[in-house]
Length: 393
Image (cartoon, rainbow, N blue to C red; front, side, top):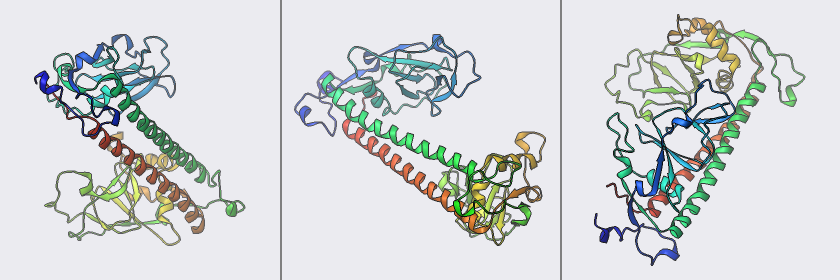
């Protein structure tokens, strides 16, 4: 692109004090960023800990663990870490080590707002179709439109304030999830016990929870022959959902003759993954694969209560113990074995009290997730207006 045209690059939205200023100029990334090889900062011991210096990757996992190593820690932050094979990037403003030699560490040249460069890079559409290192050979030659220092600072401050709100929302969401996790460990008995550590005031003087095998609490359901019903799947995050919402290949022509009918209130679990807690109460009617087991609560049983109970470490330990298979990948919990697992549970009214408490917490978590997603969408829309269309070459 010729310089005469490059000077006219303009975003859709500009702060008032810059509306009469010249347009942005397209610059190669190598004019904005310096790069460093990661070799001095590679972690040696990959037996990660829960505390220490973060060990990073540029993909979605980001922090893959923590190390106690005291040498080879990258300190000159902020930087951008760049995966040379996938072109994934992350902005880092804290000391770190890295695991992969494929990481490039990118820092700003001269008076460049690195966070703004990162946000602009995140808008680049680049297809790493081949398995090769891209930064030196191709990526650094890409162009992005870039403003003058004062406008850089203004945009970076605006986006930074949004990022602070997003981080705060993420921290609150994580705190809620941890609170729920800890509360569940208190509201349900530990393995081998029949009384929880925490009970609501009206039940503190009640008897210990009686122990019964799950076969006395749930019936196995094997209803087939409903080909017109929609297919459902059990997910770890969202519970039972329509299979079409997973964006998988179409199953419209699938033979559903052996698929199992579920109705609202049933507990559905993945026979091969119950030891991972892959179960949920369904609020939908539909069909699930024969790879699932469908259990229907008997009278005096609150399905919501047991849906939470089945996620506790005590019950997951039991599911793992009763699953049959030579190796982990072949473990299977058929209903016959499931029905023999002992479980301590209280009266229906106490079950409902616990389920309602955790349900309210889930509602709060869901609301927080929605607010966080709305903030991220707002930021994305704002950047599309604050940034011109990217110049790739």
